[in-house]
Image (cartoon, rainbow, N blue to C red; front, side):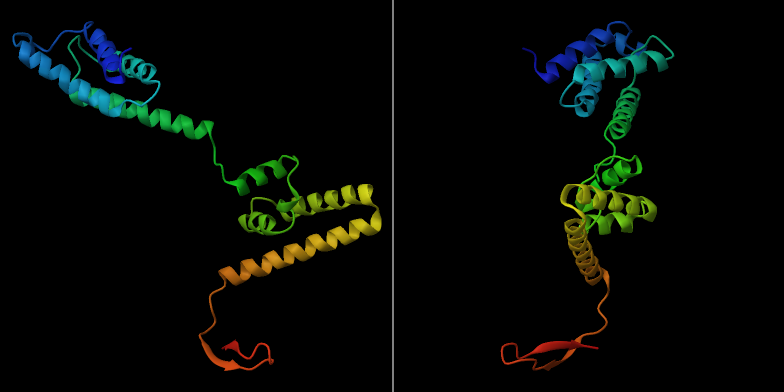
Length: 206
């Protein structure tokens, strides 16, 4: 079974047979071999680790399209074709696999009216979602109302209210933690004061 390098070399030299060495190389077999090696170094350096023959076919098709003579392409021309192919495939991959940011995914689902976990309505996830601005307050309100009504239908009015209160408390705690993490300190600790026999000192900030 051919290795990656062997397979690429076989395919590329087969493609080169459709063209002629440049006139300066035709009378010098050693120079032709060196030129092929130089071209192959570019191919081997820039080809992907997998699906490389399909990649090479696209590169040579691009070269067929852009070449203006029947002479072998230069190292620069092959390098440019390889680079353009890699950029094109990278762009295609980004379009195929959009952002995997969980906040962005949750926002997309909510804006499309799809189900999301409770954590995106109350708590740390909800705090991040609200901060992102990707979901409107009205959308958030509708989802929270729908959650309450779902619990009401399942558990009854009183238990649903208790569950909602728990959610609100969890969300307020998450907001407090977020504010504490993002708010710059107002000053350095400058004094310690006794508070109780069990906890004798507490830092007081300016």
